[in-house]
Amino acid sequence: MYVTGKRKGIAALFLLVILTAGMAFPALAAETEAAEYVPSMYATFWALVPPIVAIGLALITKEVYSSLFLGILVGGLFYSNFSFEGTVLHVLEDGIVSVLSDSYNVGILVFLVILGAMVSLMNRAGGSAAFGRWAGERIKSRVGAQLATIALGVLIFIDDYFNCLTVGSVMRPVTDKNQISRAKLAYLIDATAAPVCIIAPISSWAAAVTGFVEGEDGLSLFIRAIPYNFYALLTIVMMIAIAVMNFDYGPMKLHEDNARKGDLYTTPDRPYASAEALDSAGAGSVKDLLIPIVSLIICCVAGMLYTGGFFSGTDFVTAFSNSDASVGLALGSMFAMVITVFLYVVRKVLSFGDCMDCIPEGFKAMVPAILILTFAWTLKAMTDSLGASEYVAALIKSSSEGIVNLLPAIIFVVGCLLAFATGTSWGTFGILIPIVVDAFSQTNPTLMTIAISACMAGAVCGDHCSPISDTTIMASAGAQCNHVNHVSTQLPYAISVAAISFLAYIVAGFVQTAWIALPVGIILMLAFLVVVKRGYGEKSS
Image 1 (cartoon, rainbow, N blue to C red):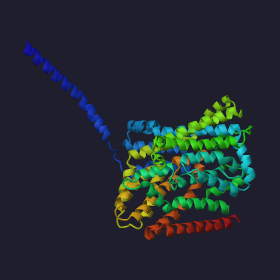
Image 2 (cartoon, rainbow, N blue to C red):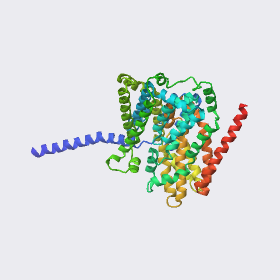
Image 3 (spheres, rainbow, N blue to C red):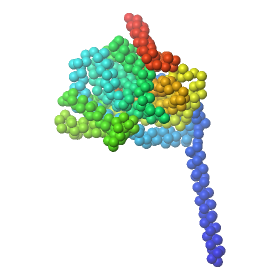
Image 4 (tube, rainbow, N blue to C red):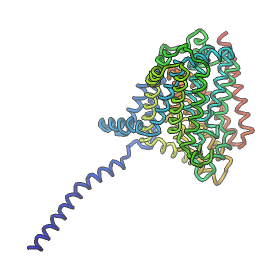
């Protein structure tokens, strides 16, 4: 009886194990199948169609929100093989919810909201108006206002997000007073953001690039690549030349002509009107703008160094290279806002209640930028899930043989197109730089440096042009300019510099020295602007 009972117990246990395994294996199989799911359009040209749809519709319809959403929807349809349920789940779970759950993205949004609140505080305190009056007494021309904006943008080279919003809040009163259109201000902000950060050794961008260069001294390679970063250097040359020569072309000319007549916007859309409504000629002085801005710079730099371990004994360069820009900027802006509120309350410029009222107002002012950023991140998630990176990487590898001297120019074009389609520079670095290092590190170190610089320049160029780039969105927010206006007016300028940079990379691929290729690029840039100015002058007359 005991043996029989024991056998029954063993049999029951064995049956339980089989039943449990039977229930578990389908679940494990389902999980494995879900993990291994690859869409039929993966790593094909179709992976680039969603951003092409979004960008094309935005430029045609002048309506950015619906255009981005339709691009996201196309990506979801392609991923799910046109399944309704799969499309909805992919767009919502793997797209919008996923990007808003990412800690880096949330840190950027926090930084954006706090900066919006700080701008609202400075406006209500009268600091912006006071600075505008002070600068107006010293900057009395359109040329001077543009050069001052460029100079400030070059000085704030730590991070492109920080650059966009800080330069915008400081220089907007000055450019408004000198009748410079918001579209032109947005261009100057955008052109001194990523293009300046990518040639600054101490910046979040330098840290990102050095992280992608495995097996090499990333920082020294970054420094050697600076003279070959033709797009960034020629963009600075173009900004200064256009300001000094005092002319514009393309859609920007219409905006600037209208600004001279008193209309800074050209189009009726005022996406940041709520922030402007809070501008007041309060009792504030210039220090009520300068102290918050200086506090912001110091606190943000300290925050980035903190995340890199500087205060735990790491050296300055290593700490900056290892910093987390998202957390560092969020920490720095938070402390800067506390300092600003304390300054205003102690000096009785604003009451504590007024300061608290500025926080939701600043948040509301940044809602357009936050919404566009969220959609842009979601669109990037769609292209990633479709294997856009793998498609471009395979394309580069298959076409790199037999055209060694032309490779820097080709990499520049591919970087432009990839960053334009995905809206990300850093993602483009991550795809192209490892390929270049593998191809040239053992054969031609000089050409490797030129090609890496072409990767960086192409990524910045595409990022500069793209309507779905976070930096482009931030520049629109910093200038309080309609986003589509900013993109459409900036595009001819960016394409002009890109075309001349392409020619400079062809020269660099053969001569392999910046001392020849860079002067050639600068001469071509200036010659192009002289020809364009004469052409527009004849049309005007």
